[in-house]
Length: 341
Image 1 (tube, rainbow, N blue to C red):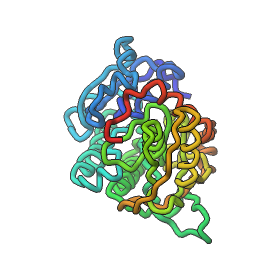
Image 2: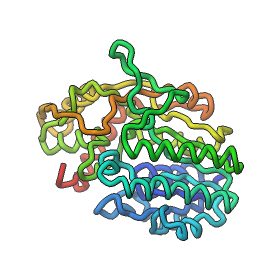
Image 3: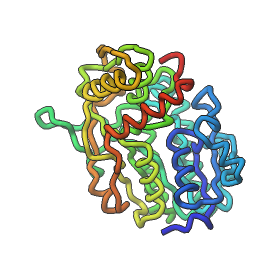
Image 4: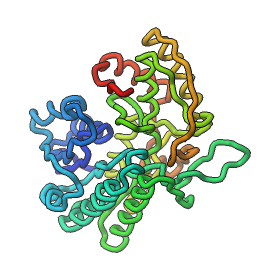
């Protein structure tokens, strides 16, 4: 196991939803004392360092914050110096947004990832953990309409510029391991949800957060298509735990699914949110249907065998437990609900 108290760690995107949870877990559960967070704080209009609870860690001296983008080679070159481990979570992380702006997708998700890999190699970083996505699978053949289980050896079929940039990042990370000896691990996150998740304008990703916030406002839950799309909803704390384990376990050079292995159709989720809306907010909300947007796959759920074998672990939070956790958090943080929801 890694002795985190003696290591210097870089978390790119460390002031975002997943990154901030990784930072907190490293410090509070693993004993890390020297964490560098690189983030350009462009994802939201609110104070990310405050809302995602990074400011107290900065004041305590456990976190050194650097504002900047991974697409800036000079900034990356400076922050990677004397770093032992890199968790590369920074991304232009929104399917709809990347389709609208493929230039920024390329700049951040492709060039930014290259910068991280190259400077990590140049500076002798022990291992780079790359945040990939289940979106790289796209749509896969279904048998009789049953949910598709995604295995790591399936041929990728990206349906969006975001998915394609993540697939490129995986391949580049693997090549840096095979050709140059830089240890890398790519994690294919399935649908992340949980406390501190706040949707971005114009997004149809992060459906749990969007549904819950619309429910609080008493607005209809918008289901795209007929709602038979499948997702594997994976709780944020489990995502963060898997991310850190990928640095601790002997799994260099691998691409690993991070999901629960349990499929949920979007219409099923909407019905669960309906019940929770009444329980938590005393609101009765309806479900409405709209056409599916471009780049929205039918989806599938994770094969977890490789994750369980290589990381020695599996997610612990059920969907019902996670939804209750999110609603409890939301009740205490109503102020963060965007006006556009």
